[in-house]
Image (cartoon, rainbow, N blue to C red; front, side, top):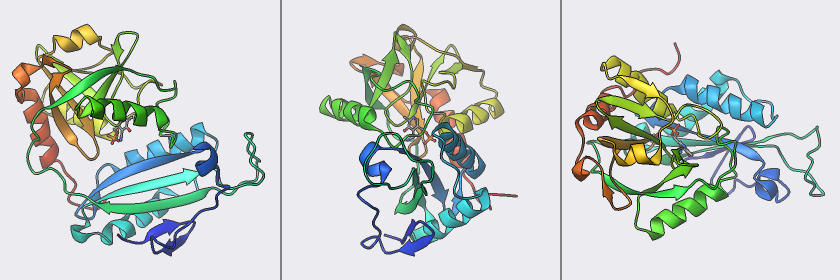
Amino acid sequence: MSLVYLNGQWQRPEEAAVSVFDRGFLFADGIYEVVPFYQGYPLEFEAHFARLENSLQAINIPNPHTQTEWLSICQTLAEGIANANAIIYIQVTRGAEYPRQHLPSNSLTPTVMATASAWTPPETTAPPVRVELMDDIRWLRCDIKSISLLGNILLKQQAAQCGAFEPILQRAGRITEGASCNYFMVKNGVLFTPPKDNLILPGITRDWVLSLAHQCGIPVEEQAFSVDDLMQADECFLTSSTREVQPVGFIGETAIANAKLGPITEQLAQAFRMSRPQGPALA
Ligand code: PMP
């Protein structure tokens, strides 16, 4: 494991430690961000920075670093990993204070942490997986990349118990997202994905796939769709930074696209692999 960045210092993982009074530990009072690096180059760094900034703003924590500083931290971390294929994890919490109280003091210094882990970007399109339809039990600010992930974890556990790869979540009959991914479906040649609102995390991969779809001339609708629509879909796939484009073959017991890799899913998965970064992040 490479070094850990903690509050302006580089530390060995076994030495990096935060206070038991940190509000991240006590209340999950913080946010995070995940940036994929391909041989030293991040995908859509500016978009990750913008989402980090939005998450911080939403919970009233000042951003402790500029975009250039964050990039430099992330690059240093990625370089500590073989081939610099790395997943960078960033976490900012409101900081530590004693005694424990729900209402935070105004004067806290955020706790800033970043780590890297090794990762192998998919070389080919993964085979279709089965996902399980579940009620979205999470809060109503899913647009914030909060470290409070208990709802997501319970849903992941439940899906794993059913032998499913991921949950696919619905609220009042509308598909929202997964516990750690966004969803797309294809119907009659049109690509659908739920709109960016408070019910989903605005996935960077989601937006990247939408821009690839535009480039490929695939019509796109950022529009809510129902469970019934989904069950009639011609294709379905999920997206995330680590999975890129992951085909879905089954929703529960219902086969989608005869449980085979659909043509638009394959086209986008290939376009994704072709579009991976090969140069510096910022102009
Ligand atoms: N939704 C949720 C709930 C997530 O946790 C994630 C990321 N893990 C995503 C969507 C996908 O976001 P991204 O494409 O930026 O990885």
